[in-house]
Figure 1 (tube, helix red, strand yellow):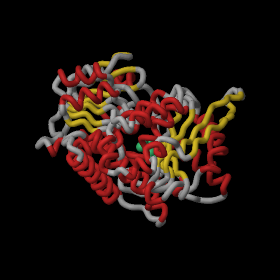
Figure 2 (figure 1 turned 45 degrees about the vertical axis):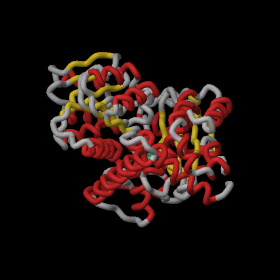
Figure 3 (figure 1 turned 90 degrees about the vertical axis):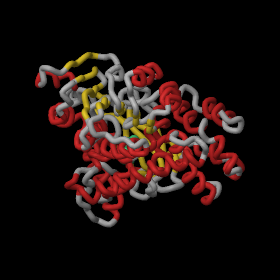
Length: 445
Ligand code: GLU
């Protein structure tokens, strides 16, 4: 760690006690910024790094709701509005039992740089709740979303803060949240949320965007190495929105996807994952991935355990933070893995990331590789702003162009800073530079 940057990190840790995921996300960015301060001494004078690490605003609120038995339930809601130098705060909402301020802050912090990399006019933010959607009825989900929005609406607006989905928040939840926002404000303000349904202001390709974008990024990384995805054996962790559409695009490009997972266990289908079954189970019936084996008897399911011991050439962590450890990274390398790209946010531990970088395989960090989701959210905002709706092909072409440009920018920035092929350095520095330059221009606000 650079001697100018280390005290800033120590200060962040001291000022935000107990928020280990946030510390990890900040450390991962700050340890790559030393050479930037040498090239741009004005950033130190303006205390840009210190300012970027302190959210502009943090909102924590009570979410009371009634369950189906009539019992009162209380959850905690969060929205961290991290940085608005490039545009309105933008980032998803995560509903998961493990959510606390440290997780929302790590996600919001990463979102600043990811959103900058997309080249779209969006700042960084994130929110959510420790509400656990597992096992909740549709009515309970609706009542929770309505109560959540009854507090959050006052902080939102298409030019202020624009949430979307993340783990536990998909089209259904965005619908209930949008309905309540519309009712309270008496405004049909389409651009206040993204990930909306196609009938009420949503964009084609938004559902597929994070997964598709991830594969476009992998394709670019392989292209640089004179390789492609055709015939490659792939393992994708998770089976939610990101994983499903990553698998879909991989299969379209002729890759062989043999495994996926959920938080209960790992599914291996040597004949290739049947995506229609996964979609039916996870998107429609909201069931567990283990039930796949009742329809495909030859497939193997094991409860718990890691997915990363399954030999593959391409590994795509698309589940959650810190799901791929240093030990997993070594196993993957030993088994011949040549490319890893992160569909989830911060899925690789610092030790895992170091292992991939030292081995010089193609390693795409989440900030760059999974930016297709939020980029397409910005395309949804564009369509809402001009009351338009684009075709699937046109929107997908835009997404593809954005992912190619993110790849080019990260690749070129890594080279400029003397670390060719290191997409971690490329993504952090390229994202940081855009935000930092805007912050200097906007003065001390
Ligand atoms: N939750 C997604 C992410 O991590 C998407 C956010 C958005 O579309 O605003 O980038």
